[in-house]
Length: 112
Length: 115
Image (cartoon, rainbow over all chains, first blue to last red; front, side):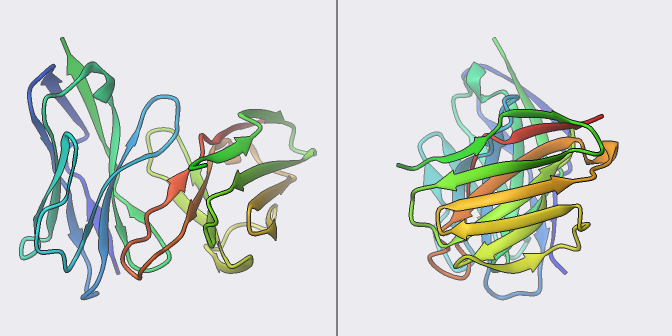
């Protein structure tokens, strides 16, 4: 069975600093996808970044990068130059086929 | 158009009411999803439609009845709900380009309260 673990219930970061949100996963599938979503208090889930299990390079999207360490089964999200608008819930997710399996989430708070 | 829309945004209903949630996407995506999310929890998958056919039902009680009238629309019919069904209901769609990349686009959700 697949599982996603996010061990940080909450994180604080000062504006303009970088922050790393941890995610580990467990699967026996040789092929899978890893995702990060942001959920502000409004409720909408916003896609941030995707990493395929066979991708050799770490994914990057603007200020977001995914630190993918396949042997360790980790897929940490790095947010550079944090902004106040980054305050939200962040979910790591894994795609074994037609489903998305989510972790429990990390609440990030950015302070001035 | 890269948007998934959901109506209504908020819904309050009694346990004897019948109501429906609506979801729409015009991105040509072939898969659509319903999720339920309780406060401070991750979304939980309820149903998956693939090419307008129900492909996954995660053992959801029959008081929730999904319907996919066409490739752009997804409904969730609600009947005889319980107060514990109060939650945020999220709809999503995906093109699912390859087996691993199931990037899903989510709507803003419907906040349901059952009295």
